[in-house]
Image (tube, rainbow, N blue to C red; front, top):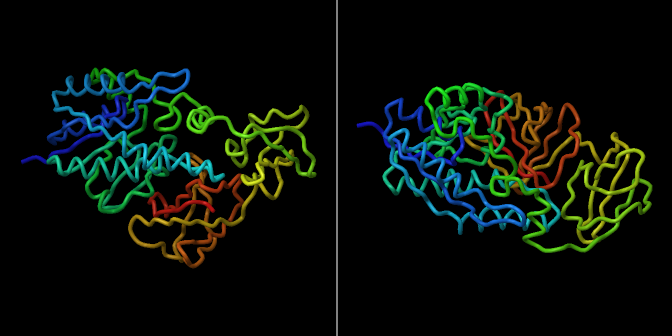
Length: 349
């Protein structure tokens, strides 16, 4: 008897090809659309109905069962509220990381298993090997950065069949199979915000913020911001301060409601030779201090070699780096690799 796989189908080409590949491999495939978010935002209608119909259309083409799980309540609590709270605290979170941890590889997995599935599958560009997570073959599309908080048990119950493919191959496969989503553009932006910018989303959630001072590297007030929580370290655009050299955000004080900027790209506040992480998560075992490890602090950012791994104390770890990293931002995820294997990571303090 072939195993039952529930595939998370978002209505995009990646998850469509995932379902097609697994059916071809002989699995009993059921497509599942996760309804995580359906709220319209100012000036933009939520696309969930179209995405649902696209996923359903592909399931019909493939001749597989299809259903919808409504996770909106849990998604709001675990992902959206978390993100908003982090921004209010002056940090810059990654909601996609939390979505994978709490929704796709926890809630979806548990619900699917209770529903009779043996495994789940997603259209992520990552690879799973014997309970370990590896980066995807397509380095430009590799999504392992967003997957570092999954646990080993979930990995052993999950499949990511397109992780061995280049994106161009996935598109070709979709066209060859005549899938309805073959030419559909990839979704952009945060997993639920989409085309709306994070600032607009926070404005709709929190309302207008108090304006405050923008202060340069000499301590001089050079402008006014419309809410310190909107700004992130290294940001250049959206400052609305006078001409001349561009300014970069080098810090902010939420309590004082001040944003600090500099025209100096080599400003020491913009660069870090070490990094401290909290909320640590290891996929398999804690890292071997003697192993050759590297770290990534943003999606698609280059890997930087770790020269020294400190001791873990109070769920914190300090890592010294061979090269300085620009614009390390509190609240963002930093992911540790051993070669192409994801060891784990944590949240930047």
